Figure 1 (cartoon, protein in one colour):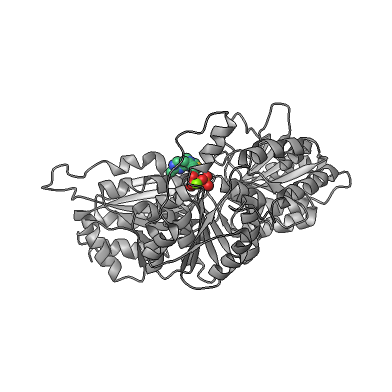
Figure 2: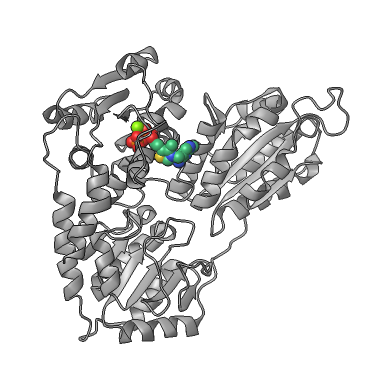
Length: 546
Ligand SMILES: Cc1ncc(C[n+]2csc(CCOP(=O)(O)OP(=O)(O)O)c2C)c(N)n1
Ligand SMILES: [Mg+2]
């Protein structure tokens, strides 16, 4: 058998369903092998988008997504997606081609050291130097990508190795269970939680795993300890729960931070310092129990006193078994904060200004989309509004990136979400800046016949940076641009283009697009004029008064 056939068999053996990417001539044997497989090739228009799609597949399934590129320029285009998966704790395998490694008549044309380039961005990066090694290399790469904390891995398959004759077979995955926390750490945590007066549960990215979500829901129901979410922990527990205190979209000075200040213990589940800090620790301040698959990286703003390291679902279950609600627990201050926070979050939901007010946009999207519908956010100022105001009702229904926080991932990740969940409504929410970074994938979405809604929030600027610029007291400079006519732009791709013309028109238009087939781009003119006043000043002032 051809080594590339063995490579594809090894991927089939791992349960791979899709390969996202753009082949080059160095991948042609691999492509030929793929043509005889049930694995579906999803051809994209930029490798970065293929990488974001593979990563999102990994995020939603827990199984490594796979992307493909050629050598040199194709592989360098994967770099941002590698960083996205690696920082985001998302399993993803990148396969890149290479010129023949044994003999080649092309000098150094297109050759850079991709294996080395991927080193700081991956858990594992290797060149295949013999077809016989394919089974072990693929298994090892997949094992590492998927093991907690998941991340990116890379294999380089040179042309001559892909064409070798081999007779090896893939290596089946072992039966492996995640290690569980040691008894004494559980005991220490139980004692601390029992003795605390006002413990608070914080749910972060690492808790967004199926078993963990179930267990945490039971935990909250049994113990009645109020909880907050980080941006990437949204949806683990339904944010409509009466014990939900708020999301840490901002790192400080929001209502939810008043609850952090009132807590004497934070049970921090699944957070690590890669995500923007949800709160800041200070010497002599609140105590923290770190519950995660791996130990806490110490940081000036994060240095927990107790760590429960091991499978999170198991840890939560064992803590729950040993704990009962304590009569001395006092959550009254949390509940005051909650009430004020909920009022603040509801403000502006019915604002009828046009261009659309961000709070109105969040409220209307929430109303239009199903409970299990998925929103995939790009990066811009609206991400803060969605994280803060949008109530996530089911796990992994708010796909946002608060780790690399890259622009350009909104549309590709929505497309991958639709491939994984064809039965659910999916909406990409992008700024005009982030959308234009991978807007060429509209062609891919149309070709794949995806039912997808793509919101493009038009402020004709890199709004998020303008917000920071204003906050720093600097004059408006260097962040405004023009835009194409988005309706025509969508239509040029064979998608449906819509423009919101008034605030009342927004909700019916969103509903209509979500409920009709095809790709719908909706241009939403957006009013960011109050971002600075509200996010930097009003919230801080009002929350300090409660
Ligand atoms: C790839 C990349 N480049 C630059 C940035 C820095 N950055 C963060 S948000 C932002 C502006 C986003 O503009 P837009 O997508 O239009 O969203 P808006 O804030 O205007 O709604 C920039 C430049 C980034 N996060 N990622
Ligand atoms: Mg913008």
